[in-house]
Amino acid sequence: MRKTTLLVVVLLGATITPSWAQNFGLGNVATFPGATHRPVIVENEYGSYNQALRVYKDTAHEVYVPDVAAPNGYMRLRELMLFGTFLVKIYVYNTKTEQTAFYFVSVDVTKKTIDARTDPFALPYKFTFADAPPFIGQSISAIVQLMQHEIKIQHVQR
Image (cartoon, rainbow, N blue to C red; front, side):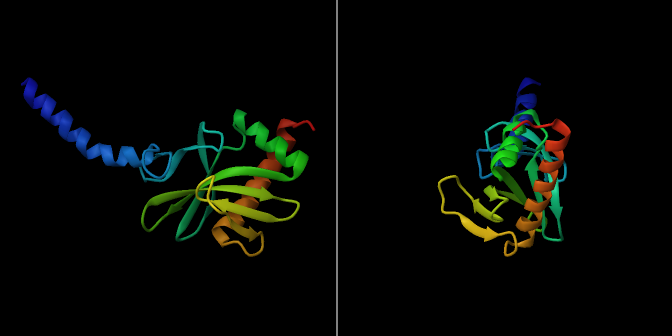
């Protein structure tokens, strides 16, 4: 009886491990996926985890970001208010392949520029708000609107 139970646990573990390894940061993305493989909890740019907010959706992509209203998001809100810039980690879910990739995105709202990197040390993809791919440009616009709304609600001080 004992050997049978152990065998079932080992076999069950073997089927779960590849998905677990990829989705919990041992592969390419640090997310906690939901039942539909879409990100539910994601790592923010400071290394802690927040609820994922979907800011964009089309037939090929869904874009998620860490909750901008989370307590550790205050620094991001203050940076936007003081300097017109912010850094955010965005997660792009491909609806066809059901895989998620992430980008470190630096946004300058005053210059209307976006620098997106797949790695903090990689060379950035540089865009203006006007020439960015729709899933990035529209996502950044939605993020800026959310952050400006949170600045008003939280009464972020200069």
